Length: 77
Image (cartoon, rainbow, N blue to C red; front, top):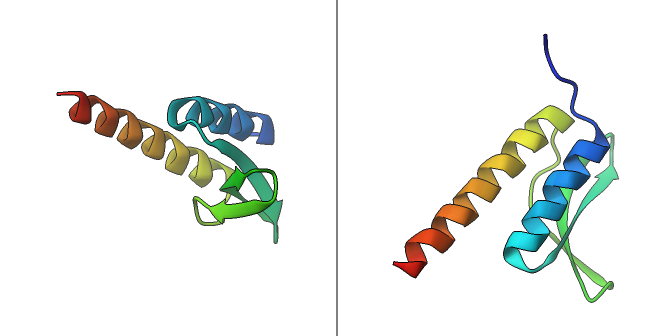
C-alpha cells in the first residue's frame, strides 16, 4: 500500500530541516504544487526546492536533510 503525503507531512519535514540548519524553512504552495522556501526576517523568501508533486517534494526534502546532516558530520571531523 502506498502512503499519501499530506501538507502536514511536508510541514513536519520542513520544521525538522529548520531545526537542523537554523533557518525558517516553510512550504509554499502555488501553481498547484508545493516547494520549500527559506523565509528571512519574515520579509524576503529564498527558493530552496523546485515546485514538485507532494510525494516527490517529500523525497527531495528527505534527501536534502540527509545531505545537510552528512555535511555537518563531515565538517566536525
